[in-house]
Image 1 (cartoon, rainbow, N blue to C red):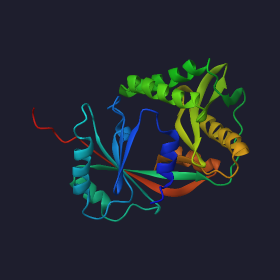
Image 2: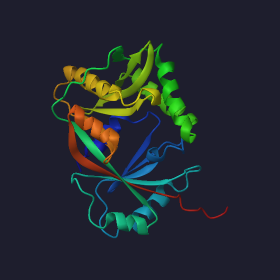
Image 3: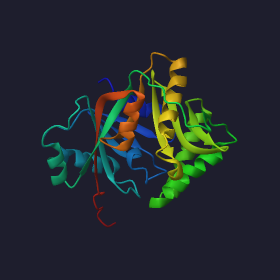
Image 4: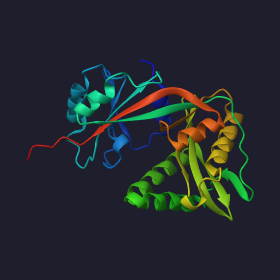
Length: 265
């Protein structure tokens, strides 16, 4: 089966510690060293679940990933080329104790330039500047207690960058990063990751300008490659990306719920 845009682009930006096992109809993704990485420990379905099948997929997850210690959430993922969520799927998920999250899979069409505000420079991050970028991501994660996880994630991104798998950019103001994002390459496409604007500098067009500048640089080197970004449906980031020229290409579905209790012993 030909993988969809989400799977192809996920492979492009997948952390080096990932363990992926292919099965009939699904893949199992594990990050044994990081149980807090919900989407890094999941069952990725090759197709949208058929009506009435979520109970069976919960059982599959429990068999494949339930024994791993420390997991905080059960996660099943799927991708649909349709723009709408299949009828009845949200209700079935709710009945199974799962929350259905819907994301837009967006692909760049015609790039619409967005110059940065005065006094802001857009450019790749150097190795020496990397700790400054890590700091704004970790600080932002402190609001919900994710600092340790974010430090780990940024280390993993750095490992990918060291291997030439992509570039990390920032918007700079007074020699400090105020917005940041990565763009990874592989399998004939590019995938944005971890787009962030410092809270004190939001609503100034920084992320829009940064995403546009990164896309222009990427397309100058690989003009035929699709450029992919994933955002929560109907969210502010999704609307922002559309202003750069991204259009809807697919729908990503995530079914998230509590980890089934394990029997004692």
